[in-house]
Image (tube, rainbow, N blue to C red; front, side):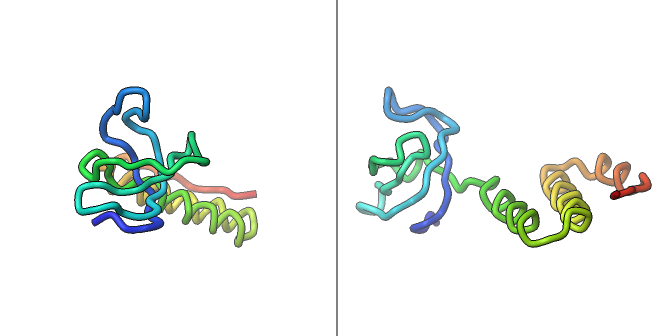
Length: 110
């Protein structure tokens, strides 16, 4: 389900309107098939897009969490927490062995 305020990404091209990978924010829905979005590259315009051509932007949640950590923590603590966040993302994408190797390495945050 795509909700108002949610970050989404295009899954296909639509002529000269948008390209696969373009990111947008949902601002409403027209009906069950069409959603209203504002694309990052055209922030002044609201576009009608087929719901089936958009998916949730998985990266957006992680970016928001990373920015919160960066803005609220001391440098060393932020670095450690961001390492943990990146490892979480890598594990979800199937890079478990890589994260295990990283976790075994001694860390030093100045």
